[in-house]
Length: 503
Image 1: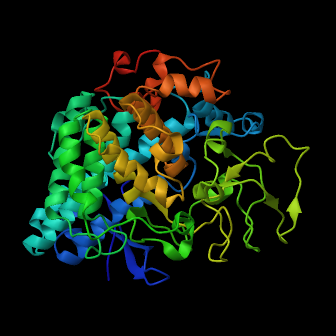
Image 2: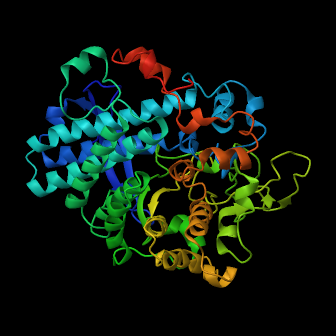
Image 3: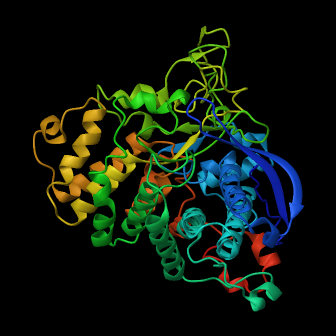
């Protein structure tokens, strides 16, 4: 029997649960059923408990991405937006629209911002506790190091998103801090300090995690840690370290591109050869997500999923970005809509419902219960992402072989080499622009667009140009999100001056 834990705020009371790995399809799931409470000392005393405790961190990542928080960094970009109906629904939905439009509801009181912040730190607290208590476990040294590697990988995932969205943030770790405990939390650390911890965590993970294919399905592996560290270095514009970190993946035998892009988004192919790390979902109670429903693909009684409408939709810029013959277009975006019986429906009279919609999360195999209870996994890292990052790194280092790696992605999409299609070898700036657009075509609605735009210095210009909802409101202050007002209520180490400028 495996066990997991679940924190409420920063209390060290642990929810122990029965955890079984369910062999469905590709043996992807972590099934979690609550059972009882124990102390961290009791939970982490042996190998079984230590594995259970780390499983609880994955649980927090599942919860963070199972609903609307997933779309922070997708809507409000040149790639994704909310439908025109969302702000008319009032209440919570206007807060959702605030994320997309950057209007006055994108404030420290925004409900999605507050929820994202709180959920991220719950995951960090779980990771810190695992890192603190695993060394005293009776498990073997190899198992302990692997589990600490998983915990540090996951902590890096949470902190990497926080530091990009918010800048420097409070940085609790496994090290006890009585002053911070007395004040309800730590003060803000600098961005450099947060990145320093992320880099250290990922280097430890690379040294101690099992390789893809050897690691248990659904758990972090060495290749995922390498790809994420490469992304961190790329974000920091440390191109030399980005190259040396990503380069081993380019010749790895443990991962490769899937032959057919559309196959990436069939549930039967989850945890495939191209996947480096996925967030695992299943039909079990509380293990589902609602991404299919949010993107308007909620019908499951026919093979042409999609009722149109709903919350998050592509921008015109994204849906029109594909070259003729690009195999990713039909796999990524739906242009026709169907009722539950498979009949084509014309929604010409209903604004935004008839516009192109995201197709990647459709449910067509009858596995999921419905669009709001989807068992579809969500990609966090794919090998294609690593290839495009490597191409970007080489281009910034003025290495002409960068184009070779871009062409690998184009060729999988059934497109000719870039220089053949456009009749010349691109300049460095042309390749910069092309890689940014190519990342949208390849990774659209997979959670990276806001970060990509910010990293490349294009966030303000691209969003104001291609997301009409944001054009009237977005300013340079929106290079960061506001820190949650609830953090200021709970954490006496923060003062008014710690809020991001403009909020």
